[in-house]
Image (spheres, rainbow, N blue to C red):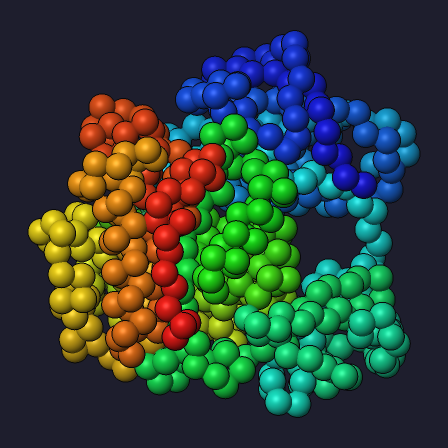
Length: 512
Ligand code: ADA
């Protein structure tokens, strides 16, 4: 049962006041968008009646920043893992019940979010709220791993108390087996998933069906391969953000963003800087767009990396990301810790810990983090891909600057691993045609020079432009100098998806 819709709504400036339900709000929806309480921090209460009974699983697919769930007045779940699903399993009598979701967007005291993060973290319920009946025999986990793209051999990992497992592929019965946690088999009549032919399969085990794709990723030299073929990533970073909807972007908007990205010739999207929604992955699977997902973090200094609460919460979210996204063939890179203190011992320990988690839970995908200190980084030996955020001719270097020359600085003396520019870009204010930095012309020329330079340089396995479209930031006197209008203006489109010259004149080379 999907519980989306218009719920009763109450807003409090603090966490403790008694809520007064004097209006209504949409679920999914953010409460700190301009039509609501932007840019205040506070607590929102969403309330509705639900007719249900038995053993239930309630799921809030994505929220921010801190959520608590009350069923008939009793707290049944709480989570600080913003952007990840929150689930509660519980039993209740048949009848009509009261459901309240309490969400706040306080930054102080949050285990993962920090005031200096360079994006506005909206408050609210970002994605569907669902309720389903569960039984003791329900399939609790069904994960598919491609073992061999030539034969279509896969491994199924299953968690269930059911005695027998009935397996079907693409709706056709395949085999019944005794309960087992792991099973290797060959998918009948399999088709490979790739960027150009994103063919998908379904597997059903008892009552549960998941969609998956058969493809392998290989990174044992200095190139990346998908299904044995070298691939050069050309992509954009994307924030889940829109001035009217906040992070609760409608699925129609996500679909249109991703279709435009694919149509423009890109093959890759980095979900910066938090877990991505299920719908986002479903679209990328169908479109043949490759994805980098990462848990919530940004620019973390040594003290964060040494803080057990921060690190434990981050690891918990990384584990969740991997478990939730494991079946999506579009997901090809597990990331974490964007621009952390990776030139320190604390950085080394943190990157090692999270890389080990990725390798343990998912040996079939490479793990990495985006560094902003490529010349002094200590962690390249730990990760599978070297990924660097660099901003020549924006934060460094003379204007207009020799971009190919700048790129060369970063390629010397690196271990033999695929090398990707995980962020590069320049800001442009929509409508500024002065030709100087901050103009559409400057950004357009910059972006095409970057694309051409990376295409021409075999040392790079890809480039991920910063940023698909403008995204909200917090507004304060210091930020105002770098984030005019309260936006990160490096979008190739503006925040309403109006294309700037850079998008209209994109030149994506054939090599990609
Ligand atoms: C960093 C960071 C991005 C954004 C970008 C910028 O590289 O990873 O989130 O802040 O800089 O626009 O300066």
